[in-house]
Amino acid sequence: MQHKTIIEPFRIKSVEPISVGTEAERAQCLKDAHYNPFLLRSDNVVIDFMTDSGTSAMSARQWAGMMEGDEAYAGSRSWERMEREVRDLTSMQHILPTHQGRAAERIIYGHLGGPGKIFISNTHFDTTRANIEFSGATAIDIPIAENKDTALQHPFKGNMDIGELDRLLKEHKGNVGAVILTVTNNSGGGQPMSMANAEGIAAICNRHGVLFLLDCCRIAENSWFIKHREKDMEGLSYREIAQRMFALADGAVMSAKKDALVNMGGFLALKDDTLAEACINLLIITEGFATYGGLAGRDMEAIAIGLQEIFDPHYLDYRIKSTLFLGKKMHDLGVPLMLPIGGHAVYVDAKKLYPHIPPHEYPGQALVGELYVLGGIRTVEIGSVMFGTYNAEGTLQPAPMELVRLAIPRRVYTQSHIEYVVETFEEIMKRRSRIRGLRITKEPKFLRHFTAHFEPLS
Ligand SMILES: *Cc1c(COP(=O)(O)O)cnc(C)c1O
Image (tube, rainbow, N blue to C red; front, side):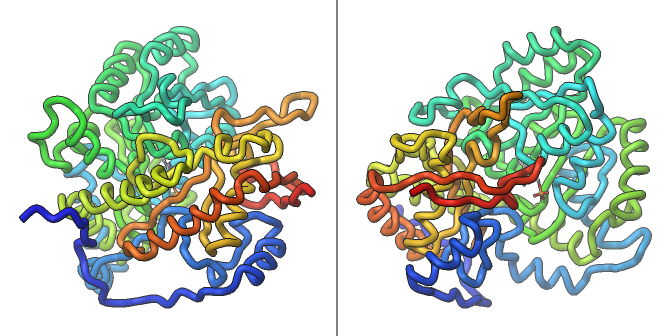
């Protein structure tokens, strides 16, 4: 028989209690956190959808692997396992272990960047952009035009605009640091990209002699979409699809906190010997020796195992379909969403949910607060708080979209948790016309969403 119910393809061996407080308590917690979810205590959160990064539940096999971790400073057996696994997946010669994705970014973009340099991506993730801009270089986002229309259906809405890429590479000839394909497009609605798009980018980069990098932390989830949506791809396994995409690139930056199913870790993979040598020098200065980087032996062991588990077809099918389950229920309630639903998160279009709140009053941040007070659900704004900038006159230049991301940790929550979230959205929809925006009272220069303070507008 063909079952309609998608079950979690695992059973639970170890549990962690969730404390459920009251709405009044949460209203006070939010005020104490200056209306910034990053300043909340996790003990006061019921369902934590802030991020899928580093929040995965590890498997019994991964925990067992951790006991086998070889903590040798040099030439660790665990490093050999991780290196073998990453090399087999990426077909890249040089693998540099780092403590998380942004450490790999700091190394590669610190080396390739600097004033006058240009980086081009479908959409730079926030830490990617920050590392590039911190070096003095410029980051340009060129998602396909369809990406900006949240309601539009497109199978690969995370794709890069290839025509625009060609134009930019001509315009900035000699100054391009790298072209970066973010797989899946996290800041652009978690949308996947096609193999055809990656092939097109690789061909153009080749022609212009420009480095092509993958920001690959959700490449397994992206492979699910390719297998089920792209012509001639259904015959390949998820792993073969990922391998084919890696083969197109010159290098890859990975946050293992996503698809490698671990709580901490990352790597940089490179083909070119000279580039790798320069990066290994930076790795040793800032992260650690080349056979552990920023990682303990046990972490490397868990990454090696996680990279195998992530391509399990039962797991990937459950992962994508359970995200879809939440998205579909919210869509049925009339919640305006980024469509189609991506692999790791559901994104609410807060501009459409609260059309009476202008971007400079941060409609997304208002929804983040509502979700927390009503249901203890922690989410994150991906809009003008995260990506807004000020012009010379000090006026806010809003981000292209005002999204709120419900990122789903891997293997952590069950269907009843998801149904609780849906129920909270029923209430959100009833109150939508009464909700007010916020203003920022304090902010840093880089990555302001992490530490900014807000005040509700009365
Ligand atoms: C999480 C993430 C990063 C940064 O990785 P960290 O491990 O959080 O430092 C980079 N790019 C993308 C697309 C990400 O999702």
